[in-house]
Image (cartoon, rainbow, N blue to C red; front, side, top):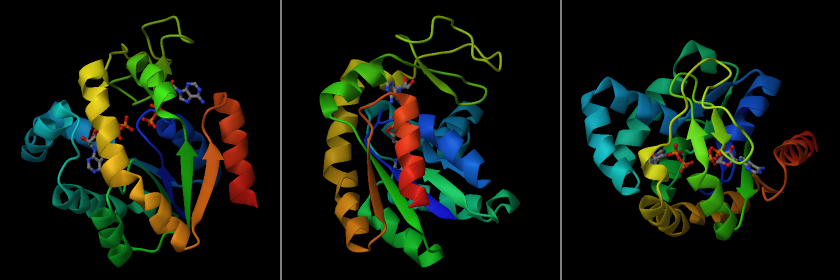
Length: 205
Ligand code: ADP
Ligand code: ADP
């Protein structure tokens, strides 16, 4: 099973990805998490990526494609994988097609005005990558013990740039995968469990 989770920043891709990956026994591959790990470790790739991420812009396609190619060669990807936040441009999707075949693409739809509240209240665990929302989670500690933080690019100034990048460069992928007959669409503007149920129903159908 090789799948893609598509959707704007804040749609709930990371939140849903864990459950889907566990259910199918496949690897969860978040390019955002991979990039943040590179930034934390101060690698050359991380240093290059950071300048784009801080501004809310997409990291260049070549950087991402190289990183993904390496990642899916790892043993935990043998049974399949779920991409979260990749591909984000038509060029990335075309490059992916040359490496492997994708079975399903799940697009999580959420209106922009809802996304802003979700992103600005998001808190993240530096250890396991779990995300929480301030409106529903009272503690500053993750269930794994990590101390939650707010991502630099989740501040209001950067969020607007990220949404513009999404509409200009990533949203065209919806048509791209619809034309290939691979697209499933779910309403992401619903409680977490309801979205999870709809995804499971769509994938089982
Ligand atoms: P993405 O990976 O698509 O950027 P996240 O999964 O990190 O999105 O979710 C963004 C924020 O919205 C997080 O704070 C998360 O807790 C919250 N969130 C996720 N799904 C829902 C939902 N269905 N309803 C309300 N809040 C949600
Ligand atoms: P979100 O789902 O909230 O947009 P991510 O964690 O997926 O956040 O991505 C954070 C940032 O990392 C993006 O704004 C972008 O700079 C970079 N990034 C992640 N994935 C990609 C990708 N596939 N292509 C280009 N840039 C990416």
